[in-house]
Length: 157
Image (cartoon, helix red, strand yellow):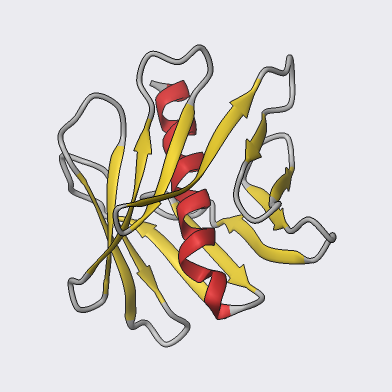
């Protein structure tokens, strides 16, 4: 399953639309005013699915992932000197990526690829292609991509 993750061009807060291969809206992400990033995820019909919420006052960035109101995992940036690295405590997943963080893979505990993420560089806003092996993991992979994108955004400001 392929998803196209596009940041909305004119938005006061983090807002994204996630499209399927045919251009239909799978998810909408709406940021809300808060200290740190708080990204609410809705399906194409406006039903609430979950949230990516940045923890405040941590030494290194951390993002809690919620499905509905239930905390399902946390993505943390690890201390490294050169190549950014993240850990995630969800389903035994880990993240492998390149130096620029534009292309990376989400891999499960047995080495199987859960999702492949690629940044499309010739767009006006942040745009990512997310190739998910199992559609069941689409929401979870999206949450990871949102957290990494929010961390990069905070670091670059």
